[in-house]
Image (tube, rainbow, N blue to C red):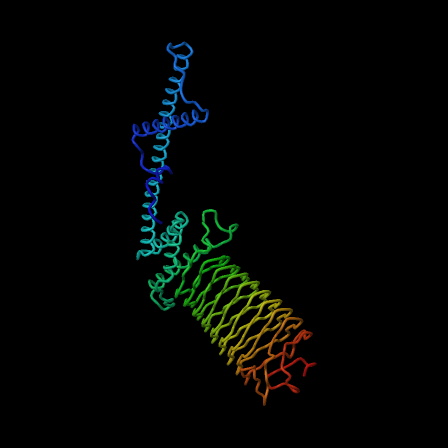
Length: 462
């Protein structure tokens, strides 16, 4: 933005004060000029061309002259009073502005001192109590300093991204175990403090400001426990990219994903438990692209998928379990496209599909199980288009097919080999044998009788 001209700042009242004498003289001159101009214009409009001379000064004329003199004097006094009042007001405003600026500078200085102190406590090598104090000090500063709230939150997130050694185990010296537990408590406290500020308005403490919508960067952080339960992710970017979940329980139970993006891309679930139980996915995007599930138990039990998208594209399932037991899918896309299942289990036991879509396009099944036991399909779509199943099991035991679409429609069978479009089913099983409801069956290819090896249909379909 360009520099504001001095004359415009003066008109706006932001310029420097003019000396009092000059201000009064200028105002009087302006007033006299206006009066003269009005008089001349008035005489011309009334067609006056001269004045009638009076050789003797009458009492009436003298009285009129005195009235004019007093009026002029009163006008001059009014001008002086007006200028004086204006300058007094300007002085007051300037003093207030200077005081406000001074107060702002002092507040900024105090905030910066608090920031330096809190940051120093977080990085202190002394007992964990000092670092715990730093966590709460930094969170309190974030609440009090809206202009730098994101910076304070960045510092807390950066603490979790610091190098973190795993549990030394029970055979380690007592001092090492105690130091590890103290450090873990500090890290879990950071998570709790952040979560406390991501709660809904009616659940958040009165002293905690709203941090929803801020950027939260947990890239490459190590998690061996901690709770994000009840947090609301309704805007901004929350990144767990490359994070490692290696033990303990990380709880996202009853969390709400209603906007923004939450990324678990390239994350490693190698141990412990990660829960999304009863979480609500009503908007935004949650991605597990290229995530590795090699040992942890990840559960979306009773979660509600009513909007947005959850992506497991290119994810690798080589151990552990991912469960969507009794989850409800009404208007959300959950994609396992190009995912690899070599062991472990993905379960949709008792899940309800009334809308949305679950896709396994081009997924590769070489082991493990994908189960839809007791699942209810009344709407939406489950699509195994072009999936490659060379091992493992896909089970629909006691599932209910009363609506929606479960699609294997591009499957072609030849010599005991099932060809899912461009994909191939060479081993493993697809079991519909004990479906509880077959009134709206899946889209299956016309393979004739009997069905190919590994495919089991309900008795009435055999």
